[in-house]
Image (cartoon, rainbow, N blue to C red; front, side):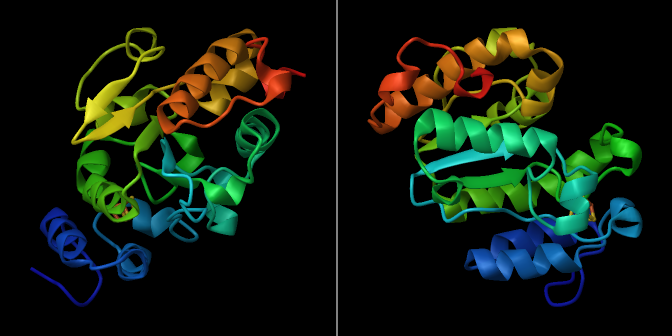
Length: 217
Ligand code: SF4
């Protein structure tokens, strides 16, 4: 087991994640990680964005090309939509919310991560969630929701309600990339976001009381 150099096995990932005392230590471990083949094709790891001051954490699936280039999650077209949901819809700054992904490296050509890649990488996210310690998790998309909840269901079965994971509330919703392809679902996403805001006692901005997605206006 390797606690100091690059994590090269799933066991290294689990050990280093468990030993990380804070987010900066964890970020450093992730940036060196070579535990799966994605380390050979990434430009850089993508750890997280935001300060987490709102006790709310969005969890996406995996970095895309823009994220791989910039080292920041959700900065492409889908990221712009997520920013609109946060800033125009929720009425707060994007930096107030923590944003991360299940996978820390981009799968080539944006292919689906393999089960082995996911199983190897997820201890990083699980420790990240412990260290950020959000009251509410919002998984974006089916794969993120299935990992966070530890269940295999359709997105339709998981969203539109409040789940529990280890004392935290979990409110799954659609991935912004899906909303770009299916804009008719933005209203449903906005309902989920309002559920999460309600758990946190956040006021719904007046312009959003109609239930329409802010990102559709
Ligand atoms: S995807 Fe995860 S496990 Fe694989 S190299 Fe990147 S950080 Fe390590």
